Length: 185
Image (cartoon, rainbow, N blue to C red):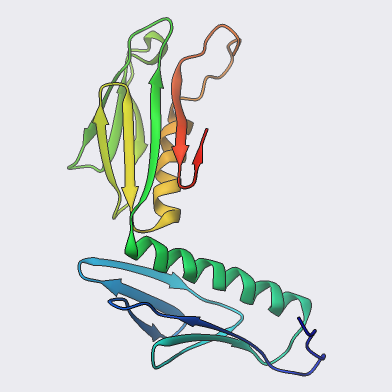
């Protein structure tokens, strides 16, 4: 790979596969296929649609611009991959002391955890828009076309059942991530 000179324009081209449409509105790129749509705000660099290609460019080639172009290239590839196939996260409900009850409130877009460590108060975790959550026994499945929303929803579930002010070696209750895209934990 040839290093660009200091004043050269830096450019990356990403090819759009069949069935995926993309458009740029201001500083936001919107990609969709059928019923699924993903939006992402783009700063620092310029983005254009030229035929079936997405062109990400910057006028200056400083270290910051090169990093940003690589970051946004990865984000756009994740968007394309997510539009082809949904991202899947699996979590497991684990309880040692008190049996937990986990359910989804679709009206409020929340996961409700009852009887966590014997607490009378319910714990709630937010489900982000565009994310599907299924509870089947002790396994929670989180699916979405947007990798960040699916990952953040799974993190919200883990965070809602974090054990505080107790010995983690004894109180091992909680909701834990067991599988994420490409990795089995």
